[in-house]
Image (tube, one colour):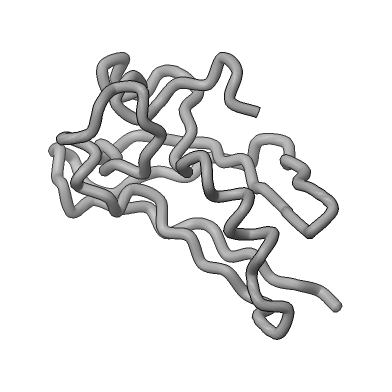
Length: 113
């Protein structure tokens, strides 16, 4: 699932004009072991300011630039494995200047039992 997908640091160096992954390698495993009575998972894109200090080969959820449009792919996981959605519509981050506080809140997974 990671073949050919950039890290946050690599995407940042290309002004986010490339596909990148905001979740680290353990994300699918975390979702697969999520408690069965939990029917909602909230993931906030762009909230890890420590990505600036991480090596370039590490997948992380670093800050997004202001005023930039993004598409999102959603992961849906069970104990049997994960599937990935087609790209979503556009989400745009707020503001006109770069800000470490600029975040895009855009992923809520809900279990439809």
